[in-house]
Image (tube, rainbow, N blue to C red; front, side, top):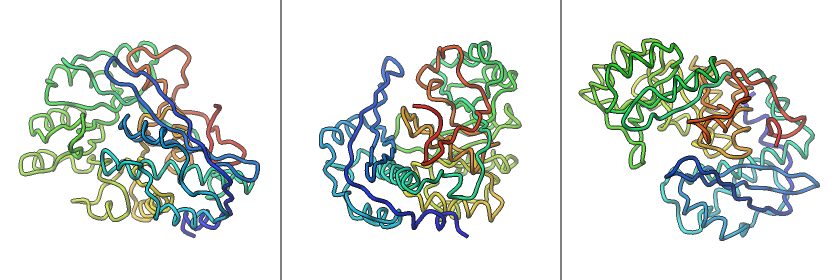
Length: 353
């Protein structure tokens, strides 16, 4: 049975909904805003988190308030069809990708509520068992590039593994220093990002340096062109993708079949597109690791839960949120990898508040 078919007909009753703003100061120039969607009905509540990066889009949503006509009795699939016809952005999104991010907030809240109303956990509903979750910590090293904070983090948490974002400012000495830690699982080239603050143009010299300098690491989101394609040809088995992946069609349209992919659930927008992509990869022998979007609330637990039941042992970029918010100086006592299974008895929830 297709994974989505296991949940599509779950009954869903929605009486009302509300919005909860979340905020965290992550650096001197970055304050992260997200919005928790609370769907309520039948004495239960379901939660999802809008991870749209634009602060203006988040503030517009919160100012508009809960004005969508979401009340009613549905199946989970009916509710998704209702969302197809609704405008989720009061003034239009700052970037087209944000439509899927917000759609995921409503869809994941609906899944949580439907499961809680049915007295089921996500793991039970999809016929899987929650497993310990391997995770990495994702870092973009500040300019000018230097090894810190990787060695500092390893002093405090010696078992940490990392996903790093190389840039054209990196040099051989930095790569050698970072590689010597033996803790780098993924290098994210950001070559598939366009029009964002983290864009990194295809750079054959950078690609050669990191591909050879981290010979066991996954190489994520390269910008393949006439200059970079030949550089990465010998490393094709380690090339993986994240930003372009929103559906099965996107997987099928890649320039070559990958060994593994990074799935960020919010990129898929709907439960159906995500679950269909899980099934497709399982059928075609494509491994998956999960990724996050700077979630501040229940969205982080959602991606950890999905990793636990669909891809627990891969280098999932789903570290506890404190490693993002306090990435230069994380407090002591944070959970280490692997995270023990923490599914709630019912719903799509992971861990404590």
